[in-house]
Image (cartoon, rainbow, N blue to C red; front, side):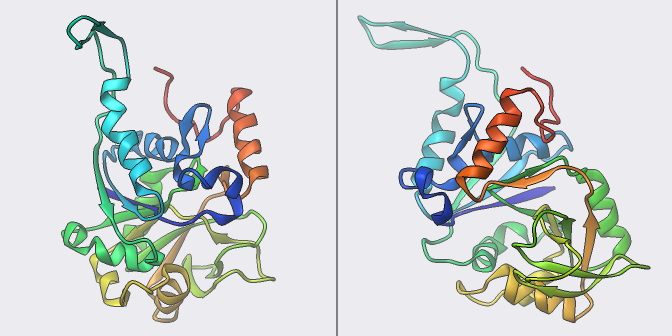
Length: 260
């Protein structure tokens, strides 16, 4: 199962950190939040990632280019410059780092990945949110509903795309970007798509949330997987401090893997 991570935004509301790096590279416990997201997917057998780059994408490229060599122990012969690695523990990931444009919107970034994703079902999430979402159950729910798309619904303050359910079927009857009122369920990322979604993606200016998910809901092609557990985006410095505090206290609910 291929996983797309949207990692190209400007992250303006976290400007204290994002002036020098893209938001997915802001660290929690000494590791970029992007790494935390990928580690979570790994626990469910998802090891192939397409990272959609934009703002400061070179920082993300540098991280992964150096990842293998800088992990583990090494020996250096200072006289010759030779480098010998003793061990290089690294995750079994295939990481595709794809430039999708500086100004491209979320839907446009997925559209640019079409040649890599048309072969079957794929997943999409944002590069700034963590949670203990059961990816296996999410995928089962998606297949059971038989829709083009499934989003994971979570219940933090209503700052993102709001979802209205047909309670009997878990089908979404309406999608509203950043509502002020509603039932409290919002789009938390961790999405699943069928290739038919590309029929809804038009141009770099296409916004996934308002242009695509709203249309999918109107067409009866959007389902939702309700996640009652932990989920948290890293939208502001306050969010970052919360996530860092949870990690330092050994109480990070999104940490679904064993320490190395």
